[in-house]
Image (cartoon, rainbow, N blue to C red):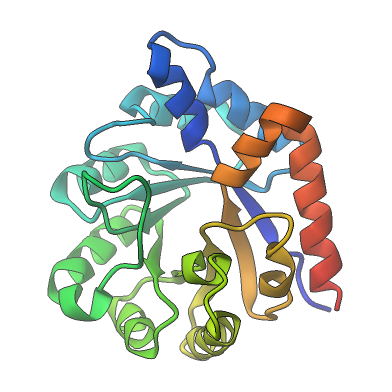
Length: 240
């Protein structure tokens, strides 16, 4: 029987709302606690170099106050590696980052940056951190990701979410290739109630990380309801 797909909830945009006015409300750590109580399997938070949403103190509190795996999204920089080594979250997902972007726009170029990425992957693993690389569903990038020693790839579903033709098939082929190389397969970016089902049917996928849609929909329905509804969509799809 296929293992249940884990749902990681990204709480970055709770911090975005807080930072729009300053102060401490709404508290992303309180949102993370509620998400876990409501059925989330883990919490994801992206500490960007410009600190536009999650702050260092948020991560420190998440690490100590949340009884669930913490996935720290981060750029592959010396600063972020040092922070992760001190924090020791359950996992780190290395993502590309540009200051002018609104959100992560694509996957890491692991093939073109393997010499720089591989030592950082090994440094994180040496501290007991599970390492994921956020990549496009591209055969060259998947092979390069495996060569770095990372344990996980997270497939970028942005193009699929935008309705680009052939993207679901690309994700299916990428998941098959990654699993054949011994990588655990995660996926995320732009997933909603309407489009999560076909991704959840891909048998190699073990975890979906979803943030913006869940936090946005929670404005209308509340976080417990949207997490339960998303879990139901994922479970129903994964059964088929």
